[in-house]
Length: 216
Length: 174
Image (cartoon, rainbow over all chains, first blue to last red; front, side):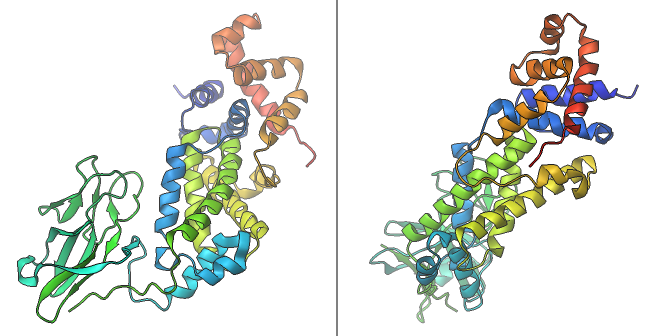
């Protein structure tokens, strides 16, 4: 038997009053005016709302991470004043065209103060297509080798303070503290929402075939 | 054969970037309140606010004044809300004109939502206002509303639907 309009609206109202997400079904459109008003009245009952601290932090992480490829020029910050956000974005746009290729999902580049290049082994010790955990002083990183190219990301999960491990069967970095994974380049995979990317660690291969990581 | 360090010349240190993020978050707090006042639940409000942040940020332009940033964020919020309702209920933006054209906050956390609700309820007949007040403002269950109004659960359900529809027809001057 089809759901009556009053039952349909009551189902939605009772969900809203319990703080649940609006779960609408086919046919709910016939009561759309009542549903929209119910959502508005449910909100009025709660009063003005602020973001939950966890959600605010997640947004902050995403904002920090997203335009890091040129987050903010100092001049933009000065010129824009209160409009520093716009400066940030403008700076990002201005810089983007000048930078070397880097995935839009790239994390922050770790630039330790007084950083030093530290030897972490011979290139031959790094299996192609695999990532190996190395320590460059206080900087922990997974160095990923693809052919003769190397890249590195922080060994710490971007969401929880846990050291990742390399899951060779899936070619992913996995966080032991929750069921989340990252590509060797640091982008989060799966999950209901993307996590901030892993921080980028500077790495290079010397002419002698040694892998060096910028650590401290 | 090497991966060179990235040039850091155009990237400011973390404190400045964090400040920019804080400014963005303060604006997004108002966007969140604006969206919450329309969807009435936290989960949808968070999803939509996140969409606004991700959509708006790459398109903001250098040197824009704060008012323009807020204007852009709220324009994006309206667009995202329009998409939300049209996807779920098949509503066109023109049907949502009143909801979407409501003034954006000028600062702080306004009582706009509660004030409008009070005005809308005040425009209803006594029975309709009563059922909505008990249900939404006092959080009564259907059974409690029925007892309070000396009616049946079935009759209250029908009255609730009619009252919501009547409330949706109330037009307030902007």
